[in-house]
Image (cartoon, rainbow, N blue to C red):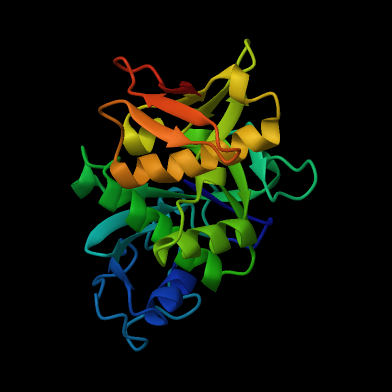
Length: 261
């Protein structure tokens, strides 16, 4: 994912060390700019402002490795090095005005190389969301983030609140980590859900004449599907209006379908 900051507001490696030192869940597990990267988050061992000289590490390689929940993530694009390039987003959630991601300086948060092949597993995705939430809470200059799997641009406060609710046992933050598109025939289909369960969700056009009601139904079903980890057999459900619906498993890499029974 890409964390967006106003120009000149991206944190440095020293500030990331300070963030980790203030946390009891996040550790700097590797910083190529210092000889040793302590896991103890000791303020005495964290580099002081200005200690990370450009002669120690090339500007193009300003990054650190962070450890959360036993999993490692790389955070690249630290100041004073160059920012990362965030992709254009098709969907917006609690975002201000018409500003595009390119108007901000981005930092990239990715699963570490030790997690290669498991980047899309539920524990890794959950830990990444938790780490991004922690960064959003600590760095108030963070404007928002881009979540590429759903092509979503999400405001910081909205992400912070929905991610925290989910991490505390609440509903999955479907608005943002997934998004809805209207198909050519008027159905609603998710984008980004396949990262979590292997398939997208398609709500039949007969149920989506009211797009707000259709979206609300979709949010309930996404939360249900993420909890289940997918769908392997037909499931009958009751719509908010009391009508009977059926949810059909996907055929191959096609979408899970919802229609009237």
